[in-house]
Image (cartoon, rainbow, N blue to C red; front, side, top):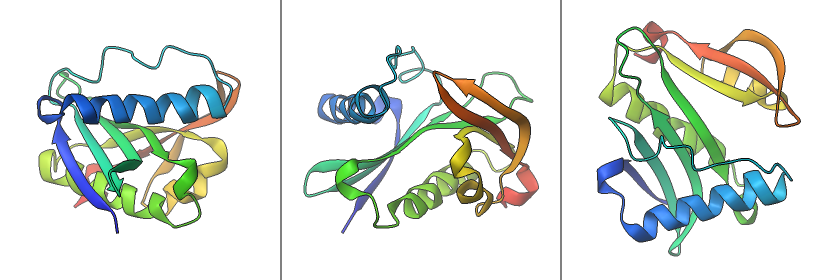
Length: 154
């Protein structure tokens, strides 16, 4: 069973922060052979939140929610990740439900945006996201910008 946490960045413990950075590095940098600076200065600022899914004291699911200081900018969901040890269990659906619940609770009137890996377009479409960009290259991986209007978030 997964224990879910929806945390403002100020609520992260050192252990939780280490676990989320480790998981992001394992998958995005090592597994996807995509060397980039994951620690980008957005994890511990403003109203940004972190959704963490734990099983047996191991972080197996994670997403980051970025709230812009600009009034009309959308809330950005990113770093959506399932550990390689937990794939195939439909945790991605649970993770997105928890992430969208957090967005709805914190910012019910805000549109949402995410930069999805292109092959996951239909997955995010299941949650009401529609393409808003052409497919583009991000670190050698095809991505597509997707958005969901605030009215769909209600």
